[in-house]
Image (cartoon, rainbow, N blue to C red):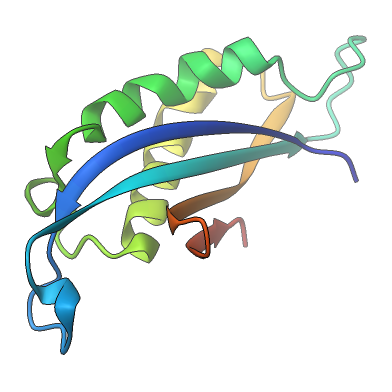
Length: 123
């Protein structure tokens, strides 16, 4: 299987209420997000999964919504896992109206640090 992945960056602040550790206090991250698409099997005659420019058009508005924001105001419990799911849900919500279904979202990774990430994957 072949896939296409594009990387995005955003900065955010959050805290994890009732978390038994430092993350219960207000702090910030410079996140990296990777979104991955795979072909649906629809043959469009073009030998690519999805154009990187199209991925940018789909994902950038979502990243802009989150960039330099206090994520507790957007995601109820903004753990890396919940942020990955939020981004995936938003992409799935908007993607069908912007594409001919030649590709599907299969993964969203949110890196809080270079060594720590959470990943949403298609079932």
